[in-house]
Amino acid sequence: MADTTTEIPKHDVIIVGAGPAALTAAIYTTREDIETLLFERGVVGGLAAVTDKIDNYPGFPDGVEGLTLAQDLQKQAERFGAVIELGEITAIHDEGEYKRIESTSGDMHARAVLIATGSDYKKIGVPGEQEFYARGVHYCATCDGAFYREKKLVVVGGGNSAVQEAIFLTRFASHIDLLVRSTIKASDVLQQELQEYVDKGKITIHLNTTTDLIEGEDKFVTKVTGTKDGKKIEFDVDGVFVFVGLEPNSEFVKNSAVLLDEIGFVTTNQDLMTAIPGVFACGDIRSGATMQIASAAGEGATAALKIREYLEGRAHPIQN
Amino acid sequence: MVKNITIFTTNTCAYCQMVKKYLGAKGHTYEEVNLDEHPHRQAEATRLSGAMTTPVTIVTREDDSQEVIVGYNLAKLAPAVA
Ligand SMILES: Cc1cc2nc3c(=O)[nH]c(=O)nc-3n(C[C@H](O)[C@H](O)[C@H](O)COP(=O)(O)OP(=O)(O)OC[C@H]3O[C@@H](n4cnc5c(N)ncnc54)[C@H](O)[C@@H]3O)c2cc1C
Image 1 (cartoon, rainbow over the protein chains, first blue to last red):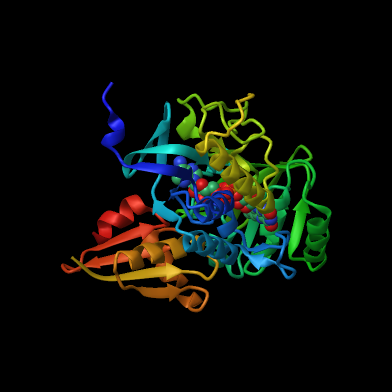
Image 2: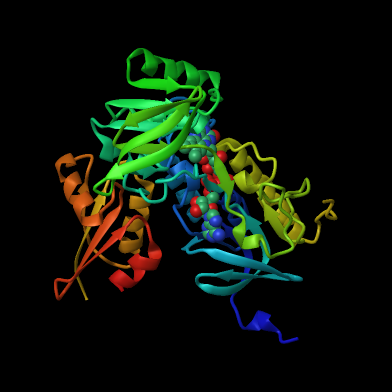
């Protein structure tokens, strides 16, 4: 077989993604002088960068803006020599000592790969959702909320993200209808905060309410129709923000030997190694992850230390 | 050849930072219209982009033709400013 390793660039570690998990791992690997290249197809800082305020990341008693945390993590990783390339990884191939990575910048080889690709917003899958995307249907409050000053909105979802983002959107919107399919699942702290906005008349909660149809005029959203307690309910609004959960960014490993759980999250052993030796996963993309920035950062640190052991030939056998 | 670039942004928009960083890294200067500071220009951003989102990047070439890039989309932004 041709020695392709001489033909394409070689790296010690390639990290897929540049969210909190990836950037933390890069801080650790580069401080150990392990050459590390990160690939980011979206925003450096991942979902943390598009979150308004983070109140539960340790070390920030007054909370921290997501964008600030993301920029500081990037600075810290770059200070030790991490290189972030803007582009997408499209496939991973196990070629033994070196893994071959396909990317929008061409093929590369890496001795170890860390998958830290997190997840993306789930769609609700109702008529009008795709048609009015970015013209009344949105998934990022910090990106698009400012377009709804003194306008009426629907927010769909009942988890932490939906409640947190609905509260953020009250900065702009005159009123928000929060459509919750069953009951609110957000944390007690967030629910208490939400109640303050309900009491002020800024947010109205609709439990047991599905979102069925998004309609508009002149290319922009004007109405959302749902079903509440079995009856049709209509909302004349200017926009809809959807926060109904996340789906894993794992499509690029689907044809590889990396194993996924039934939802599509990457399975690992206790050393965060996937079914391919030398390919690790951490953060939100890992099956069983707790979907928090602090835990993503923690897993990033663990993965980096396990990668070092692997590169030094001290890795434990895989136990998938 | 690029004559000028205008970016519509907001304070909290992380993707706006990515566009600015990309253009900065490629040595381009640009005019930034922050819609939190100039909310009256929101309608202009929507008219140009057909969308209610930021970033919106308007690349004007020497022949005055314009390309509008909605969102952080390197596949479109990179060739538009090349
Ligand atoms: C609205 C909202 C509010 C939240 N609030 C909080 C909070 O208050 N506190 C908290 O602790 N957590 C919060 N979270 C969760 C937190 O943001 C995530 O747990 C954390 O960002 C996970 O980090 P990560 O690095 O694993 O993944 P991500 O942050 O998702 O980063 C993954 C990165 O990988 C990139 N990527 C994906 N595929 C590829 C590819 N093929 N090639 C190149 N790059 C790729 C993505 O573009 C992304 O930037 C919130 C989440 C949301 C959605």
